[in-house]
Length: 256
Image (cartoon, rainbow, N blue to C red):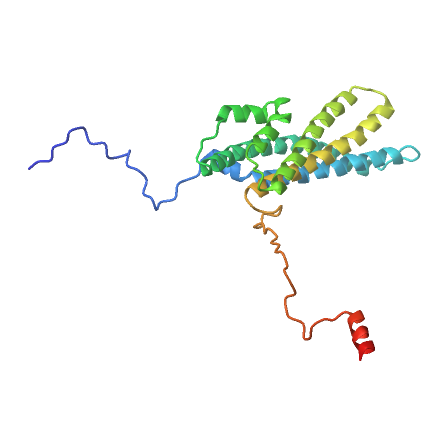
């Protein structure tokens, strides 16, 4: 007989994907996977920025008594401008990627506990990306998923949080300092910019360390090996002869 259906068949484009077929990662997943690479790139760029500012400060000191070679000055300016343009762009991309990775890590850890993430996606994005608010909330989000069983991870999160807050304060100080127009203030601003860039590189390295620890890896991306310690109850091998105190041997000799 002809087949009969109680409702309209819904096969076709709505068929589920076969279990063995790999799914294509979305753009957010791809960007989240790039978080370690972008954080490492941020550390490198800001490290170069610190070197560029230090070289410029050295040229300023040299120029107090002698003329500076125009080629050296042009090379210093080019390096400073290149790092100042690339640094914020790479840092912004790394911040977005790290935020998406944080959302994924929180979902995974809460799912392992048999619960859902109590914080919504929008609140996580706003807390991590809105200037000012992102000095405090990312540390809160990370602390919520660090358990007491891994003190190394909790210590790494706290270290990053302190460096991140100091970096924000130092950035504001750097912007305000540049409003001064005296020559000495401008020279001190170059030195302050070098310190700010150095701290920014340290923040990126600390963030990369936190990301690696959540993946149970070391800073270079290798599987982390936890040290194992056992309590020794005695020597590994029995001695050839029982150990006797020297005083006991002397007493036996006197007695004999």
